[in-house]
Length: 299
Image (cartoon, helix red, strand yellow):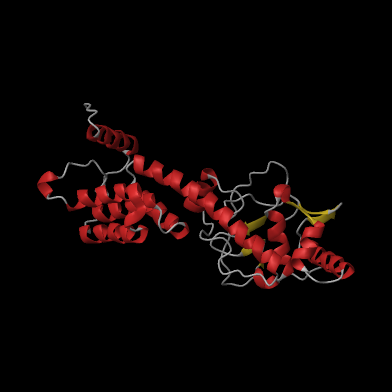
């Protein structure tokens, strides 16, 4: 039986999100925190990269379809160059160590499998808008790049990490872009600014995030910095970007027009003006239609 480690007084408290699996979990919930962090949480236990092959094996299996990965693939990834008998012995020892900690992982046929009832499905494992809102916006899950700073000592495993990091980041960008557009349509500029900052971590030249940051900076009263944000973006994409430069150029022109030429804008700039999300969204859309010569009246 594995000895239970004493709980440190400084250990951070982990609040588990609501389980999405309907079945009764088999053992303590297992939480993968791989976006903005590199750890697995099992009760009071923290399994981190320094744990070695146990951490690497669990991460690889968790990111495989149905939490199942071929045994031979794991052998070549985690124990490259070793005789087959030694590879299989190392795998048995690693699985025994995991089970002694209470992790339901086993060898079924030619595959290593995690019990899906034990794994908590979080945004780290499934990049959806609903899980982002639950785990990151309303929860306390860490958020950032995939396995920051992690470098595997095994070349084949590192190749998978690099490829999967690109896949995860692409999925995260799609979620952030969708949510950012929703916040902008609602004129929720404080929420849009936070999403834009997150998005720029994954895509430093993202047009929508950059223009959002410029608009939010302008609304905060920093006209010079707003223009500087656009100028830096235009310099980065270069003069040969063609039509890609148009939205940023038009926004810069709007910022630098004399006050007499500026049009009124219905935006929530006063902090006490709250609880009007749908009304502000309707007014914002009416203003946008008016700019395209599709006038209307709002009472």
